[in-house]
Image 1 (cartoon, rainbow, N blue to C red):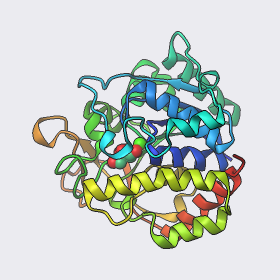
Image 2 (image 1 turned 45 degrees about the horizontal axis):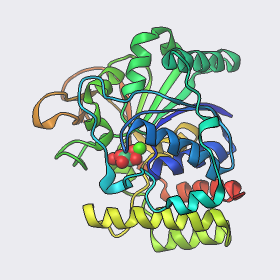
Image 3 (image 1 turned 135 degrees about the horizontal axis):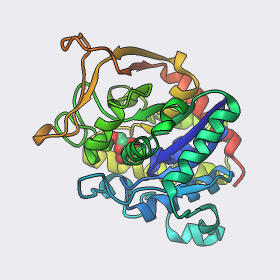
Length: 322
Ligand code: BDR
Ligand code: CA
């Protein structure tokens, strides 16, 4: 199995990324860290524990950064709601009587703790740990700067960026726009980096056919009910804000790349992240080699979407223990 550490900001699609990382048979999820983004650090950390509970799993959740490296935090309530997991009310959480706190660990030096856990997993398995980032890359940049020895123990796969149009800026995607300086540090770090951009994740939407496949794969269970509520909320906000008929599920695509890269088409490119002016957060992927620079990243250009849903729904069926 592939050893994985997931850094996320749940968030509806981060919640699905957690479910896939926990229940894909090819992945060993070592732990989870959180970063502010879709909501505040306190809320996304709580939501990571809640997502694990929904997945019927236990892992340590370590809160990371409350703020981007240089910029003010910006949240995304218009898509994910005030709680970050809009669609599930506190009345629901009262019925299940779940306390997220025991799953959250708060070491004195969270980054040292995360680095140490990743390095020991890498040494034990004699391979690089897949560090999958599905939020802003603040934590990853801090880890690489503070613990450079990590570089030989990880491979970064991130959901974020675009080589066409952005979703929160003309050319910028939300995760990168939240903390462009962090993404620039990661891209230039020399670590193997793969970008799973909007261009790919926008092809993975929860269509009516997917809803049927999910209902058939999961059966009439409590978890299925919960997902219908969560994903229904996500569908509505995506319709309102972006006029999408069906919402895209960005984050689990990065988890899938880490375990099944053969399901993707990719290109080796030179990736530079713009940090200045109105294009801050743009991910410049030199698709045609204009800059005559050595590639420093792999960018995904296509995903086998039916294969994604087969893997995702199989994971949800295994998670079905609520
Ligand atoms: C990304 O932004 C967040 O809102 C989602 O969770 C995803 O990681 C898509 O732009
Ligand atoms: Ca996310």
